Amino acid sequence: MPTDNRAEVRQVLLITLLLNLVVMGLKGVVGFLTGSLSLQADALHSVTDSANNILGLIANRFSSPQPDRDHPYGHQKFEAVGALGIAAFLGIACFEILHGAIKRIGGSLTTVNISAPELWLLLIVLGVNIFVTSYEGNVGKRVGSPILIADAYHTMSDVWVTITVLVGLIGIWQGQLLNLPQLQWLDVFLAFPVALLVFRSGWVVLKENLPWLVDEVAIAPEVIQSIAMEVPGVVNCHNIASRGVLGRQVFIEMHMIVDAKDVESAHEITEEVENRLGERFNPVRVLIHVEPPAYKSDQIGF
Image 1 (spheres, rainbow, N blue to C red):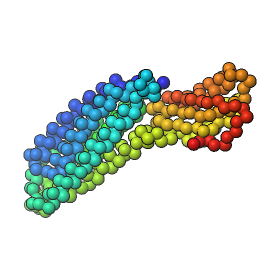
Image 2: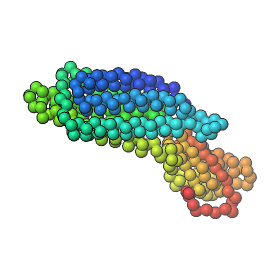
Image 3: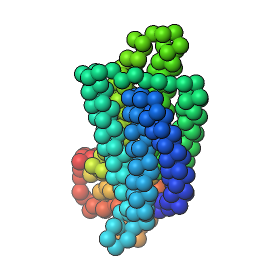
Image 4: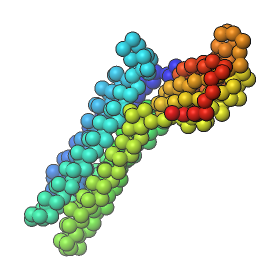
């Protein structure tokens, strides 16, 4: 049975929500004061950070790994649904960034005024983002939480976005000091790689969680068969299927032929198969259908 780590996940989400709200506010204020499109886009990205934390808290509320009458396989897919919501937010942020950049290219260039104190403030924001990414990622991997891992990916994209924006703003700041107004275009041009970084983060989150929702195979049937065949008394196992995510929760079902004289002996053999699969892939739930001894099948999987 998987461990219920929702309380720890909820604590991490609450802490990161508070930090993301601070980051969002600082970026928004500096972006408004300086007129920087790339920084305003970065602030928009941070809005999705906070929204993701709220979405994660909602998903966490309903994602108990323990089964009940209405959800006999547990509720953990709610976290995967929440992670897909994060991917959707990232897609929206990417569109808004590109839309703003293209609109500014087609219109008049807005002058960006940046000062050294504002750049130092953004460096502090960058440090907070790096802490949040490390904190969420480490806890997410330790407790096997897809929502924390997905949000850590999102915040990591925020780190790269902030670095990109900082490079552009430092260039604009130097342009102000050296009287090079052409460097103002850095703000617009850097909005495009920012959008690409945001899109990449969304794609990673989607790729990590969609297989779980569509019941993609979790373990190769040949691997399961080799473990089962090592148990004394197993003659053949076939029609093997698996789903779930390794380290979170895996469900395995198979048909098996055993060398047993009675039901009790057959049960002992299948119990040993379940135990060995549990040792290898825990947490795992295994369902074994015992076939008659005369039955023959070479079909390992479906």
